[in-house]
Image (cartoon, rainbow over all chains, first blue to last red; front, side, top):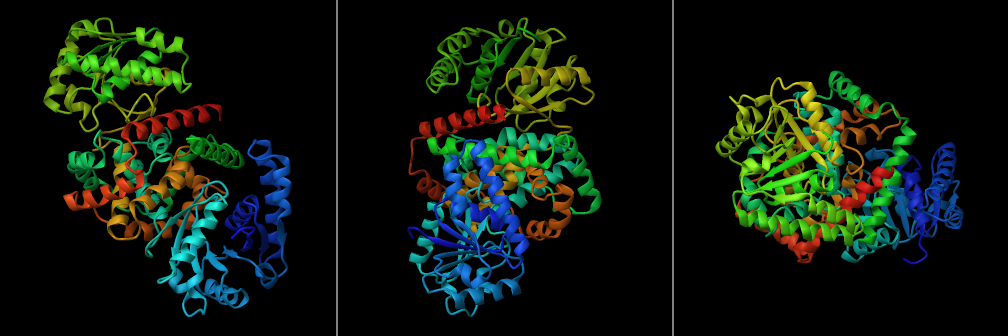
Length: 311
Length: 311
């Protein structure tokens, strides 16, 4: 898949970030949005974000200019996907709309083209059902924003050829992402399930008066999150005892059980809870402008990734 | 609390790491362990770890030598705590033993001395019950290892004077830690509850065949964990919608509910589960020597902390 031509269909917050991933990764990147105004905004965002990457020292000016030149806005779906080896769809999160787009894509592109969707909730079996080229369809679900956070959940259709899965993962790796294979559909795949588990208990801790919003967030960002940026939960467990995870789970399994059985229930996402948590967030952020919060987050994550590459 | 004299009681994995925190932070650090051999091993570990900090570029040789010179092994509890402004106890995780040590400490030290315990499970109310100086007793629960991970959970006794709480937190900040206030006792305080919630779902994902160990860990270390090293769960939610957490929870509350209600139950920590997860870990780590895993973790976390200080 050298000199890959890619197509980005739908250019909202996720789609535009994918376009940056591909263009930065050296791919010719064609973008299409049913709303021409949205596509134009995406192009503006790309220019601004590339300029920021230059001023933050992540790219040279030359690299940014080349990346921008690789992106072209297409007037219709057909011209966007013509000759594309990889298509990433990031349209509305709606099964019927995705089925329609994928039916059209399946007709328009050759049999070797990989068709990926950014869906965070839908099953690829449903989206690709009945399509002649159903097996080359994938979920490639990114985390927000994909040009900063590399993990991408890859869920193939049942019976997709191993070669195709490998090829899709290889392509994602080549543009700097970190593909994560999901073996079967489950609501929320892997990442959103894990996040929901953590958020559920975080809200429970605040609602039950054990700690306030800032304490919970400090605990994560100055504690657990520092380890999780380097190692996942199993890697952490493995390093918590001299003899590794067998010894650690063997010794502390009963303590974990007691703790897990004491965790809180699913909260109500009602106005009262939201407002009470939101006030804690207002206090914690000191109402720092959102653009500054996002810029700090993105800049630091990209720097952490540089550190990890250096080892 | 300038030029603080500290005492570290118990010098296992956690105690010795506390000694490094205090000595590195400029405190005169007296260490005592009922086992003289254990105290001697702690001193060896300190020398080795300081040398590593120098070769990794975190300290100058001069700083390491000064830190080491600030540590002295004491032959008994009394000489260790004499004149100490802050005592950190890290003995066995056993209520009766902690009650006995605290009764002795309370007798030995002046009324201004702060008495902290590293307990991860016990309530300070139980440990300090009946002591004349009960109110100056705290939980100061670190994450492993405290000389690398800054978060420390601080749980005061009921009715502890605000001034004392502030003073303890101020001291912990001064030696580079990040105190997190726990408002009332709950099993696992904040961090271990949040960790247990995440681990429970991580195990469920593996056991139910949605993904393997390496996929779950990659999802965290190349995805969620990168954000959590910068922002806690509420900070992340706040940056997931242009208008912040009110808009985000308002819009996706129902999706979160569906997800939370689908999360897995508490797993059995039986031999079969442990062995199946452990095999996944063996594969993932490629049996990399434990010392190398730990060194990479610690080095990268310390570098991330440097990045965050620079903003």
